[in-house]
Amino acid sequence: MALIMVCCFLNLLVLCSCTGDPPVQSERVTDPARYGEVNVYVKEDLKKMLPLLPETLPDAANILEYGYSYQCAILGDPNYSIKLVLHFTDESAYGIERSRLLQLSDSDTVRKQTENSEQYYFGTTLQGFDILTDAQTEDGHQVRIQYIFFNPADLEIVYGIGLFFDGSQYDSELIDTWKAAAATERPT
Picture 1 (cartoon, rainbow, N blue to C red):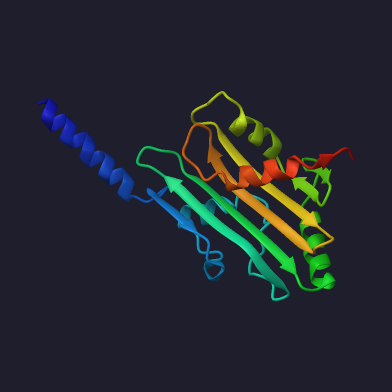
Picture 2: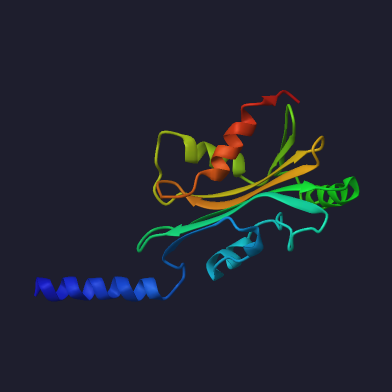
């Protein structure tokens, strides 16, 4: 009887993982030619966030870095992140994109100044970083990361978007980028 129950449980796990919501997989994409190619779960979840990422890559920008990461185990929580670093080849295009992004800021946006950049954290991003980087693990606590860093001297913009669950396996690229930027923070 126990063997039959174990087999039924395993079949149930396989069936649940096949439904694809969220898909059980691990994926890392760094090829800019595949920009915007995300799974259906991520595509739907991005609709819940601010439209920080450009719909298409601007012609007047070089891609310095692109990374899309998605992880979800069988009974695990889905975690994904998207990081994009653009270097604009003309000030006008940089200004247009900067204006588009600043229009998205509101009372829930925190602005910080660093040596080389302006940082904008949207929603509960800073509280999310605290949750993800503290020593305490709160299994199942969902954190949304949404930030933009402007570097006007180099005409660069860093975009960071992600959904993480505390205590889950995830790509820490967005957190590492934030830590590096925060290390150069100065009072505003």
